[in-house]
Image 1 (cartoon, rainbow, N blue to C red):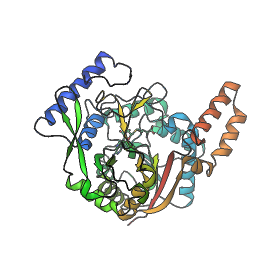
Image 2 (cartoon, helix red, strand yellow):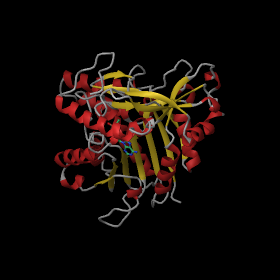
Image 3 (tube, rainbow, N blue to C red):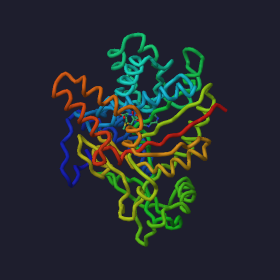
Image 4 (cartoon, rainbow, N blue to C red):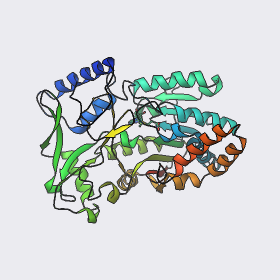
Length: 400
Ligand SMILES: C[S@@+](CC[C@H](N)C(=O)[O-])C[C@H]1O[C@@H](n2cnc3c(N)ncnc32)[C@H](O)[C@@H]1O
């Protein structure tokens, strides 16, 4: 196992250690003759189908796992999305829901149950999940929890391309409606680099090498993709971050192509779609703040956060903040209409969730239940919890 970090993390079980060793051997074989880009390292440690954190299903969601996402904290998060779904239906959008990266399946479960209760169930609820193990886990959980008639509305696909046609029915999987992606953008592989902010000529890529005992960062000339991504960005770089000393940062160089493919497929759907991307992050100036000299990369292992991505490969989560300003600009360039970005609190308080919260509190059977409901709501909206740090970007696409 890669040596433990200088800080204290729980020791993984022997079987988890074996899994991580297998992944380390695989990564060593990839990096034996050359260094790996950090995006390739991140792709493998998160999405390798046998040993990756998400790919193999190592991830545990919720209170007993490594981190807790909004739909795991309170069903009121999903209630806000059902409200949006009703608005979308009133506006005549397509009749389907598409969820990207459904994790434990909690949001899909709550959405189908709540929309059933409110009489606005989608024709299809399509899940695009790239992890084979999570697809299986979601299918087992939802099959056990939902009546057959609701389960029959679900479809799983493993790529954007697969949305074009359902192999069983020969029909498109998604005919437009609502797209939901909670904490998906932050889990996408990024390229790591050092530079004097805004100066593309100063960029050094931070690649990954294995010196036998552990993975380390090595500086290298930047790849063409990195130079291109930064060149597009350099003149929009927040001016107050201009600094003489080099700093580390991350960027998702694959985002323009990913957004373009998504837009292309969604614009072929019969109806229009509203898209909701939730994540932590901010404007370019916030993500690339001058005092953030080591980027925004964070790792999570059993609710402990740290910044060493080389610890416990395949057993821990790795994330980076989402630059919503750049994402919105790239989305517009890909052909999406950008409807704006706001905090999770502002979004939720603008739906009917406050009324739903009051009704739930009034109907709570005892004090323990009302305390649970209040705590969940507080976590979603309080600025000191998820309310401000988590943002939502809303996009729109019309049929071509
Ligand atoms: C941090 S988890 C969030 C899970 C869930 N949305 C939630 O809020 O609890 C990230 C999820 O996104 C999925 N994912 C990552 N990249 C993806 C992509 N390009 N397309 C679809 N899903 C993706 C992962 O497999 C995982 O299910």
